[in-house]
Image (tube, rainbow, N blue to C red; front, top):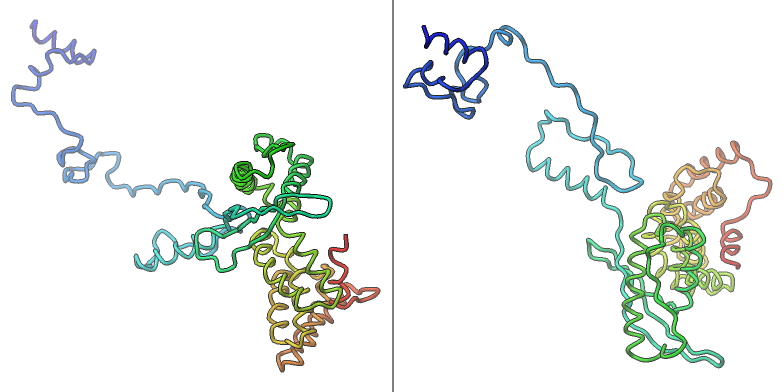
Length: 347
């Protein structure tokens, strides 16, 4: 009777004391990983009563997780479903292609060299900046020159718009003496390289007009000046060097590339290179897409229709697009493409 009372008390309070005596000497506890444990992968015994005769319920759908991708990329389309019949190789190729689509342009900045330039009333150091696209072979690396005062002007402009965003960015200090020593030039080269790299890492800064203009405006201004002077070969040479860099910097907003591309079209056309002009014009139309309200849209379509007629291509569809655009939004006075381009970068 005493043992029976003890056993009842242990069962009531969940005590572990004396349980072995109730289970017997040969008792072996189930291992959770054992095939003898209900619910384990190898379990072959009967199903619990509450699960028997029922169909397992599908788990509640989870909200889609955000996909990795570029900052302004649209949601990926055509993603394979969980029960896709694609082979492993096909899936690998699919995700490799998606990764390429998601990957945004990354640029690497180097201060390759520096030279001292002396003029009648001034002496300064010109720093050669090399801009390369990372992740793949870049055959169109950009090479440009800027002096310290150009960097200083950029910093002042950025502080007006992005003071909080760049408050931790270190700008190389200005020195009153010793600016032309080899030691100072080497030190400043490293500091300016770091400065550009840090600025580019800040999204709002690298997309800003100030940052893009710092890297492209002097060359573009020179090119458009040559265009106005009728120096088409020189203008084209400058544009072909600066446009690839501008294209990388404005990937988030391709329409910013249109004026430079249209200037290249005008140069090629006036140099009697209609095929090259038409190819550049197609790139410009692709950047514009369906922005009929853009000031370059109608003049570009008109120029492209004329080039297509000259080359024996389909000019009717281009004329039709132009006519439909003019019906929807009639212009008081239509400018030619050349009249528009010569007005760029006047100041």
